[in-house]
Image (tube, rainbow, N blue to C red):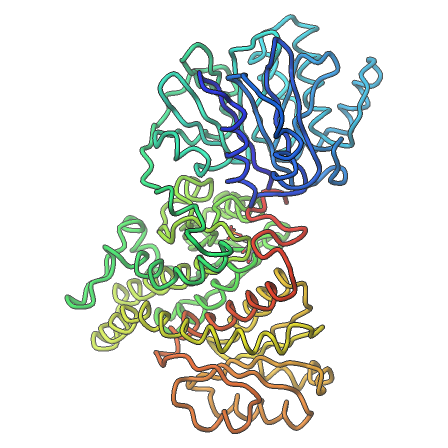
Length: 612
Ligand code: M6R
């Protein structure tokens, strides 16, 4: 949460920073700000609201500075307003800082600083942080980086920060712990950002800074040291990310683009891994732990939100194909219990961003108890990909819309491949079934393409339900997690209350909610529980509920009972979530657009949740 950018070089910093903030706005959009060193002074421009508000208040100004830092905020300490917006400046006006993370002991630091005469304008932990650095710098007469290094040994919490100082107008200093930070290397210039998206239009040479590293950029050179002041040899990566992958490309919203990209993103996930003609499946990323996986006594899946829903589907797949018991845990709950983890247990951590704080903390806990952690992550170079023992990237391309869509289907694809491979290695799947599932998986991109063709019909249905106050989503078996996912999509972007439930559980409570005002989305594709879900639809209809059913192409029974039906192509039931989720993504998208909601940046949310 929060996006940070920095620039030092020979170009005009302001437009670079502003553009970078636009790219990072998905990480937080409560307020925005930029600080430059202009005419020997720290010059700060900040505003509550989105980047365009900052753009408006600065549009008639001309800037010449070649150094600066910028921030887009997701509020933690203090409400979103102009004063709490970053950058924050120290009392003397000498230092300006931007910060993504939380300083947990800011209260005691603040008390101490107040006693020493410091004053504070904002409610933020960050303003305390910058004055704390200033205090150390002044009292010990230190360089900016030395003062920062000492300060960092005394703060508790997570941070990615960048600092500039009026005293040293050609120096940019940054550090990270627990929050991501990427350094882009240009010719005599440096870019900093929370992820690589603001950087790739300038350079594809990047360094993903490690926890507790401090980088100092000055005079066309950079030096990275750890918290003990020991120089580090960085690993420079060449990114393959294309600019068009992070732009809307003619779509009204990123979410729309990402929903419609799925035939390609799913194919990209399988590229180089699955060869249906030859009947081969290769997963190089988990080669070293393949044996450990097939021999595991237990698999624990940890994730949050949509990634957790992908984990629930994976539970069914692994248990069915590999006969290994699986537990799926919310990372945030797992880490605050005293979970039983045995040496050799396999923990699969699923995350689109690879930066989710709860998932990261759960991984550390699992590792400390001897588990082997396999990461299923989309963002290359992200923290989770680095702390996992091994893993498989999704290769779905950047997902910018806050509501996760293509990452979910990519997660299902990768998890299915991992399970299938493990089952083959373990011998729990017959060769002909293995080959059949491989072939079926390879057909999923074209089936998703077909499912997307219901878009117009779904738009019409959306128009009829756009004013509903509640929705119920029901599914059984593999489609139960899809019901949860459909409900999450609707509530997060349209702000309509929605609940996902296993269809058979409805009679144990939620059935009391059903009347003629309750739209019930039932995922009722043809599978082993088809007859049962048909009965559930009848139960809803008997209570005058309005049923929108997602059915398998050619179903002739359910259309006679449901009020609306949306067809999806048939596939094996374990792969059906990849297809049956598509209409639910579209339904939530259209309803949100019709309600005038900000689809890509829903209120109160941020794309990567880097606070606990
Ligand atoms: O980046 P991650 O997959 O770890 O994120 C987990 C959740 O925060 C995320 O899935 C969230 O629930 C999305 N907004 C759902 O659309």
